[in-house]
Amino acid sequence: MEEFPEFSKKVIEDDTPEFSRTECILSVVVALLAFGFVRFVLFNEKGFITTGLYIAIITSVILFLKKKKFRISGLNRFIAVILYLFSAVFSITDNNFIKILDVVFLFATGAYFIYSVTAQKNQLERFLPFAMIKSLLEYPFSKFGIQSKVVKSAVRSSGFGKNLAMIFAGLLITVPVTAVVTSLLMSADSNFSDMLTGFADRFAYGNTGVLIVQILIAIPCSHYLFAMIYSNVCREGLNVLDEE
Image 1: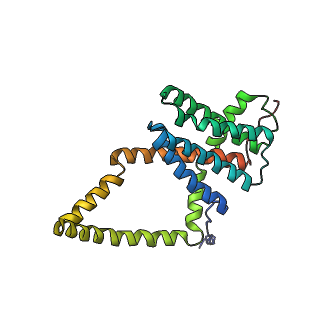
Image 2: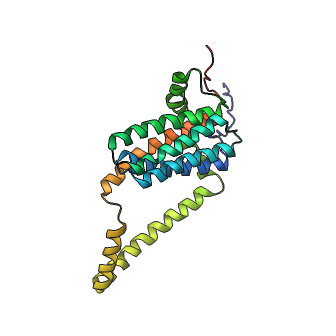
Image 3: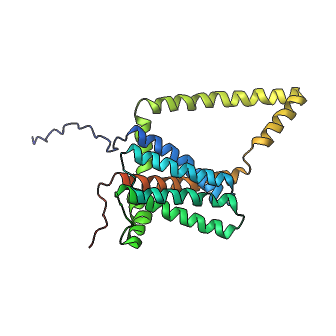
């Protein structure tokens, strides 16, 4: 009888790379800031809160780059100051056209700032148009799915996934019970019902459909912004701009 070779059992390891704690924290921060960008920029609620949002984005990027030991040259410090100054435009004008131009300027300049710092530039890029293409398109889309891998790595490490499952299970148990108790209290006490309704009206976000749309838009925005930062910081496999 012909003998067939015995195949050894091999453990197929997941190819998800490990990420640092700093990168995991950045992923969460970027996700929150991306939602803020969609909520307060794309949906045209521009004002003091949008200025604060841009300041938070710029500051978060600078802190991450410094954490990764990148030196910020005089040129890039000047660019950072320009970014901060133009962030104030949303708070000093009601002209929507100017605000739209400012959004475009901050977006493009911010992308170049990340590119310039991580490439350790001391002067303005000689081939600036090509550098802008790389910083806005090539680099971010080359690592577009990296944030999902960071989230997957974070869930797998330090028992985070198990804790998250326990929290989710707790919510499944407590939310229905809380809803029933709240409903009984509202039907039994009109003052409590009025108080709860007033609280909900004061803190309600608004149209639920709009909120869902904003979250759905924020997800790719978050992936893009995180990929923009990560691809420049972790420069393996990048097609670096040169004389050719």
